[in-house]
Length: 124
Image 1 (cartoon, rainbow, N blue to C red):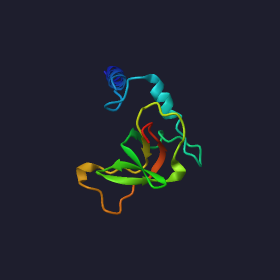
Image 2: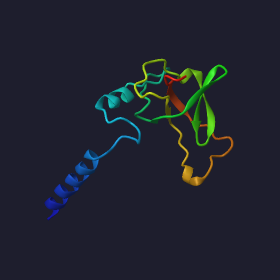
Image 3: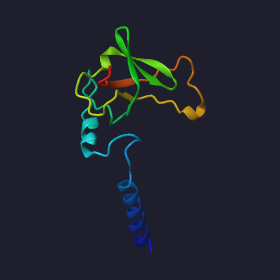
Image 4: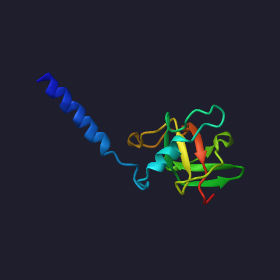
């Protein structure tokens, strides 16, 4: 009986993982996994997506820096995290270490997400 339970648990977990889908609006393309995995922090070379949440965001240029629209407001992107490279997604990508759960309401006025990497979109 224990053996049956272990096998069932493994199969159930495998089925759930195999049905995982990309974020809404993202193409179903295995090459995208490799592209996201290739994003590296400029100063450390550490991966951006292995320890952060990388997603497309609306962006704009403001003065001498980029901004991304996060949590219903514009947030400055530090110039030192901008990756000037090919963007396969089609819009700006920001990799955030610090997230805010919008279920808790608006973030506090001083909240600033920790943007680890930013790839400008073709529109900026």
